[in-house]
Image (tube, rainbow, N blue to C red; front, side, top):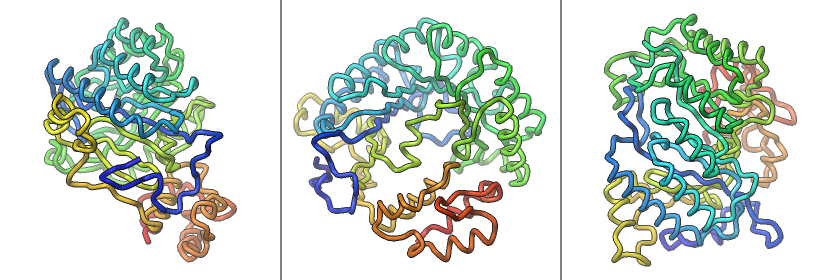
Length: 407
C-alpha cells in the first residue's frame, strides 16, 4: 500500500501484528458526512450547511474515494463502520444505501460488523429510519444533548425533546436494538438538578437506550460560545460526572470509558478501536487513518475534495490528491506510539495491561515509565499492578495524569 510514495505495509515501525495469510487483520472504517441543518453554537467539528446539490456531489466524490482506495484494504476484514459528522441523517436513504453498497462491494465486511450512524432529531422520519435499517445500519447514535428545551435552544440545536422522543421510538419500531444517546453536561447556567432531570428522562424511556455518552461541554476557541460563556468550575464538572456514574450504575450501566456507559455487551466497538490503537481508515473530508503505525488525513477543504474526486479527466491519476497538504503523512515514532498507548488506553476503565505494553514495544513499562507510575500511584491517581488504571481521583484529574506520560 502506498501513500505519498511511501510503502506503508513494509515500513519498519516495530508493528507487531504482521499480516497473516491465514487470518485477515481487523480494520475499522470511518465515513465523514460534514453537513448540518445549521451549525450549533458550541460546535468546532468539521461541519457546514449545504444544499441538496452539494450533498449529492459530496456523495459521488465519497464513492469515488472508496473505489480508488479500497484496493489497499483487500487483506483486511472490516469489523466496524461509523458514519459521523456533521449530521449523516441529512443524507437521503438512497445516498446512504449507495455508500454502504460501495463499501460492501469493495471491502470484506464481517457479517457481525457494527455499523453505526449518527442522527439528529428533527432530521429523520419513521420512513427514513426504516430505510437506514434496511440498508444495513445496526446501531444509531442520537444527538440529544439535553432533555431541556431551553438548554437545547441555548445550544443552537434545531430540535426539542419531543422531536427526540419521536425519533427514538421510531427507531425502536423499525428494529434498532442498539442505540446510543449523547448528553452534554456543564452547560452555561445549568444546575445539577437540571442535568439530573435530563439523565432521568433517559432512564424513564421504555426500553432504555443501550449506551449513553455523557460529555462535559468544552468551550472551544472559534465558536460563538467562546465569546459568550466561560467554562464551568472543575469541581462542579467533576460532581456531574460522579452523579452520572452513580445514577447509571443503579440502572445497570457500566462505565467502560471516562465518558461512556453501556449495558452488558453494548460497548461501542468502533470507539474502542481508537482507544486501543487498532487500525482504521477514514473516508471523506478531514477523515483520519492509522495503518501500520502510519497516520494521514484527508483535506479539510471541501472544494478541493470535490474538484479532485469528481473530475472525470483525472480518474486513475487522482491517487492521494485529496489528502491534507497541510498535514502530510506521518510515520509514528516509538515515542509517539508509547505516549498514545498510555493516554488513550487509560481512558478505559479496564486500564492498560503491562504485558501488552511489553508485547508492543519489547521493553518493560517500568523501564520507560517506572518513576511516573510510582509518583502517580503515590498521589493516589493510579492503581499500579499487573494492570495500570485510573483511580476515582485519577479520573477526575485525567488530563493531568495523561500529561505525565508525554516523553
